[in-house]
Image 1 (spheres, rainbow, N blue to C red):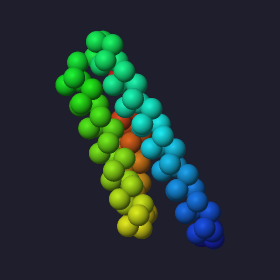
Image 2: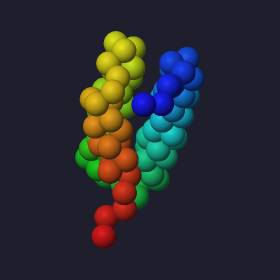
Image 3: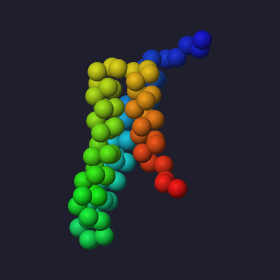
Image 4: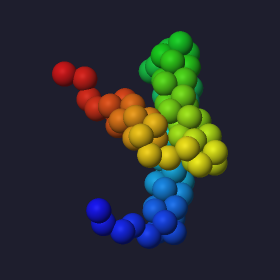
Length: 87
């Protein structure tokens, strides 16, 4: 097994979490602007905000509670599959 520097893992996790927060805030603001322009309905925007916020809040809680490893992996998978385009 390869030795992993814990400090670099913590720094990487913090950077990824901050990046996800920034991206999600831009997405949410973009959908709010679309609602204000009239191209999206309120229910659509609220559903989107809920679907984006749930994994974000779960990963943030897990990060601060130091729950790493397997569970955080599943939250990240949920996060990635949310953004895949529908075919």
